[in-house]
Length: 206
Image (tube, rainbow, N blue to C red; front, side):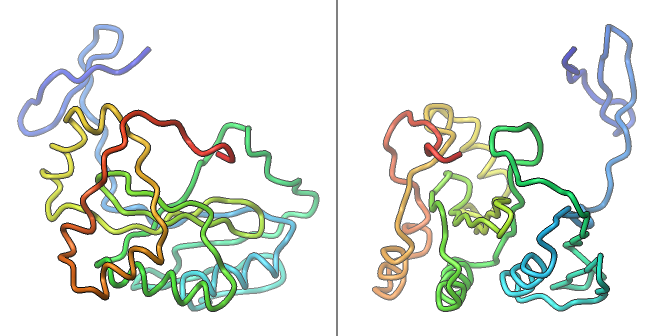
């Protein structure tokens, strides 16, 4: 049964489950890391190190920790012999997303990856974010994004509005077109404003 929001008490959000008032569980301060299981160990480690511009903080013949910020690791890759190929239609984690500070940073990382032979599989403006998706060697999807709004309140207002309700998937774009617009000096807010195309479905290969 779905949990229903039911107000706040003393600053702690509470929920009603089966008609019984329950206090909200204390939230963590951050998402620490993601662990990927693979039988394709070395190619996966090499890909993720390249993809994130990461450093290896630990690696042996079955486990690797990769970091790109102050955390000791953000991605862990574990070798598990007998792990089968990813089944795209199975339930589970859909993708992992990484945020860049600016549109320039997002497109620069796209160009750097492209020069290394890493090409995107989908580029779309979701409305709240401008996003470029990739796949790792095991077929796990990775989103790289930049926020389209300056504040969370602005993003929430857009997602609560009719345009997002009509099309929560996004409007596709080509990253090279985005780069041309940036080089022309066009305002970033204008570039990040989604072109509305009406209702749509996910790409066929999702």
